[in-house]
Length: 300
Image (cartoon, rainbow, N blue to C red; front, side, top):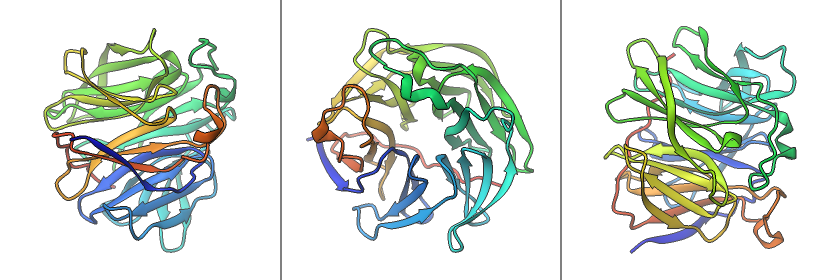
């Protein structure tokens, strides 16, 4: 039986990026616009909070300790104990109206993260208004090299890989489209972009995503109050209704990788009732009957 519970009532402004670390057996997530990182045990206990100096779009733990964080002003290494950052690169230093958003690590230890336009406050998913398409998708290699993989993006979200590493899934949230790329796991190169799924005609639009051990893609419908599971051929395989509409991202975790963690946002946005605006927290869905895959750490 599927059960949904509010695990941590963090009252996040823009909760995002749930990340289960197998080595620590802890869950991490962020509050993007509050510039905070959170972590807790699988059951929501032992909540810890860390601060970063700018808006944060995503993070990944490092094999060498600490984390890589994608901030408004570029990619940085983060020291949890000192709560300080050291800049790696700012590939969009000449684009003050963009910031980094969602990102994840591939199975060779590279960090893939994209940017988004800062004018998202003028966006309404259901009215079709569109912000600037000035964002890009980037790859951070283990030696610190940054490569631009894609451009013309409004809001980067949901990078994740098929179990065989041959496909990268990636969402442009404001485009209401999830794309699939051919992915070369040896080089980190992408090619052959095609539409994998479209949210046009749906309530809400795609946000964060993950892939389960069977190769099916799970995505949160922000403003849509549902989680969708897509088969590898792009058809909707399953719909999980959610008690609120403002969910942002999903990630499998827990000791058996069979809990689906969900982040939500409490910031005022179009179509979000007042009573939901304090529900920016961490939710857990149990009883799904599917397991996820371990998330790698950044190898640099």
